[in-house]
Amino acid sequence: MATIRDIAKKTGYSISTVSHALNNRPRVSEKTKEEIIQVAQELNYIPNSKAISLSTGKSYSIGIIIPYTKKNSYYDSIITSIISECFLNDYRPTFLPTNYDKNKELEYLRLFASKEFDGLIFTSAANDYKLIESYLEYGSIVSCEHTGESKIPFVQLEKESAFRPIIEKLQKKGIKKMACTFSRSPFSSLGAVETYQTFESTVGDFSSNYTFSNCRDYHDGMKAASYFYKFDPSIECIFANSDEIAAGMIEFHIKHSTNPKPLIIGQNNDSWSKALNFPSIDFHLASLGSTAVQLCLQGEYKNIYISSNYVEHA
Picture 1 (cartoon, rainbow, N blue to C red):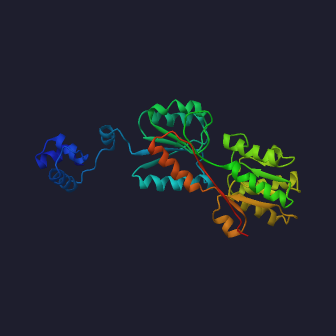
Picture 2: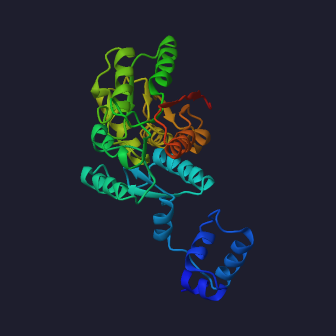
Picture 3: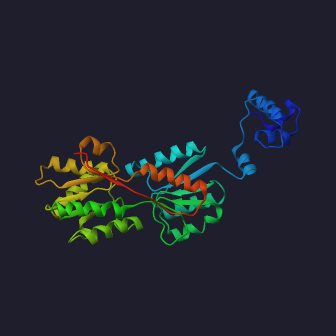
């Protein structure tokens, strides 16, 4: 494999001049740069990424903390938009799964401290954000969820302003008894707590019994529907935490011919709700991921809220 020394030998320029030319430094003339780059291409020179990082102070990589290793439609949408935005900015996304393991998350934070990444994006965190805040001295950190009293900037979905008007609209139609599902639990994060409190304050007789935790895929949706039906078959509406989960609930009620069937409302407005014609809350997850990347690269401390809209396909 060719090295800078090989290029210097063939061109007759010093090693420092070749290095400046390959790193596009202004102190080298355009003619010299062109000559050096041409020889580098002829020799099939491949730059050492670690050396570039040392010379520029940048890795051109962003670490993405993700909680799950298995398919999850919510995180899939965010990840896709993160990849697209990183590509547009010539950055490499490095995905760091944790399965909500605090120690694994701390390992990634130590990598960040060693300059492995220029920035870090948390799609969801296992550790307290006050602890994560101590790593801000090593670079930009952004979260896709509320970070509480910490100084970690975030991009967050506006859940309360999304759920409350829909609940009130349904109540005016006479629908009173409601339930909802969560990817972890109603008390696992500030966002989950906010959602739970919105239902608790607007839906009469609502309690944790009207929630189903660890709901992440189609089959979990079927389990949730079974639980709610056995617990209280008079439930009139269920808010699922994704369209895929909502589809699983609908499948349960079709298979078991339950009557009356509750209204099922999904989230994310993806192909499931469009194909099966059930209502969904579009939280614009693509905007969540791309905005998080932009905020991370800007290195600014500010909090951004992403609004939603209710889509009735039927």
